[in-house]
Each structure stands twice: as C-alpha cells, then as structure tokens.
Amino acid sequence: MIIKNALVSGKIKNILIENGIISDITENQIPGDCFDARGLRVIPGLIDVHTHGMMGFDTMDADFSSLCEAYAKCGTTSFLPTTMTMGYDALERVTNAKTDYSGANILGFHFEGPYISPKYKGAQDEKNIKTPDVNEFRHFKNIRMITVAPEVKNGLAFIKQVSGETVVSLGHTDCDYSTAIAAIENGASCLTHTFNAMPPMLHRAPGPIGAGAEKHIYAQIICDGLHVHKAAFLAAYRMFGPDRLCLISDSIRPAKLPDGEYESGGLPVFVRDNSIRLESGVLAGSYSCLFDCVKKAIEFGIPETDAVKMATETPANLLGVKKGKLEKGYDADILVIDRDFSVKNVIIGGELFI
Image (cartoon, rainbow, N blue to C red; front, side, top):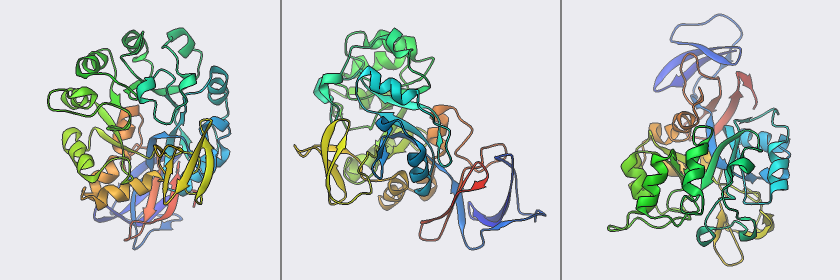
C-alpha cells in the first residue's frame, strides 16, 4: 500500500507500506497504486490500554468481533480489553476467548482487579474482590496489564512476583506514599486512571500520585472533561509529561448509546447527558472513546503533537510494542484526519478499514 500526498508533521510525504509495516516515508513519489490523502493529515492509530467496551459490547461478554470493529471505527487501532472485578470463571472465559478479528488489534488483556481496595472499589462489585494470589493469576492467559492495590494483604509480594511478566499499575487503592514507593520499587510502573479511585495528592500526604511523579512512572488519565477537572489534568501533564502520561478512555458498555439504564460489571448503570453513573451518582466509566479524549486534551490547551503522542507513542512504549509512530519499521496503523480533527479513514496493518 502507498499513501501519497499525506500531511505528516507539517510536510507532504508519501508512505510506503509492505507486509503491514511502514517501509519508507519520503517526499519523493513512489510508483504503484496509491491511496491519495491530498488535503488530509495522517497520525498514528490510537492505543487504548484501559477500556471495557462501547456501543453495547463489553469485554466481559468474551466476544470481541463487534468490539474490534467498533473501536476501529472510532480511531482506536489497538487496545487492551479491560476486565471488571468479577469471578474466576468469568475472567477465565474472557482470557480464553478468540481475539484475532478484523478491526482494532487486541494486544492482551488489562485486569482491573480483582486485587483492589474495597474502600476505592468505584464501580466494581465488592463481592468479587480477592486477595492477590500469584498461582491463581498465572492460570490466566495473555494478561498485559493488571491494576493492583499494593496495600492489601500479599499486595507487595504479588507485585514483585508478576512485574516481570506483566505491567503492574497501581489503582483502586487506599495506599499512602510510602506504600506506593515500595510498590514501584517492587516493579509497579504505572498509575491507573490517575486521581480517580485513589487518595488525593496532599502537601503532607502525597500518596500514590506524588510517588508516581517522583519515581517518573507512567500514569493513565481519563481526559473526558468529567473524571478529571481541566486544572488537575494540566497539573498531571506537567508532572508526568507527554512521555509518561497516557490518555485512556475507560469507556464501558453503554458508551455512545442513548440515555437510559444499562448493565456493566453486573451492576446497573445510567447514561444521561454523555455521562455514565451508578444509581448513587458515582461515575461508572467514560462515555468517550479515546479520540474524544485526544480532542478534549487539545481543547484544554495541550499541544496537538503531545495530545496525539499520549494516545499513541506513549502507551506503545508502556507496553513495549512497535506501534504509535509514523516511522520506518513501525506497524502501519494509521488514521487519516481532516483539518477539523475528524477521522476520515482508518488503516490497520497496512489495510484500509474505513
């Protein structure tokens, strides 16, 4: 595949794709059949490391055909299907499911729990919270990331044992600064939806946020304009920087559906005015897709290049995959966008999806 006349970082370029990989980017013309992107820009495909579902589909359904298609149509070309804190059988059913479908690439699973704090359970079902168990965890296949509360019984030991096998992210936690530091020194390398479901950062009790910033680990953040105030988002951007701050959607089953009552993680949730909440009013997850979050970050004043980076190159680096950059040798997952920052075409593995 050849993409010609594409605006790449302010310059008109031609992109040669072979076997799903970018093999050349040049200002010179490349012979062969071309996809003409004249008047349009290209950016890397988005990578969402924390998303449960959308459009009525959910990770816990263990049926990923429709999810892969739905994400791709929204500009997310790779993702980690994120589980809820549910029972062993339900989790095993998810991780044993077929994941090779047309559309967005599944890079592995993100376990959000079940090893979390009841105090900061958020929209997770407390009855399914468990004590960390390495032997149990290793029964599950293809876990790329796990969210853990390090202060729970066996928490630090669990982190030390599994951090070489999967990305450990601190979240749904009541841990203090010293415990978070210990967790990071034992291998934790990320914060789960920073600011949400964790103690706040205070000047004498900086908690996991202060520990994460000090140790310069990665941090996920939901930039939908609801979960985190603009001022807090900008503070996180300055603390962690675009090389460590990852935009996530944390979208759930009812994202992009009409107002009404739905189910997520075995709990009733309610969509109203582009937000999703429990009956108590607690936010249950995001209504946004990752591309919405990129646009919201730009609206908040983040440079466009950094906003895109935090949803492409940065999460790719966190996961250690050769995606998220328009460079020779990288996977050819590409978005073609217009001047209004709307997705016009999606290319995944060098194939035109839309």
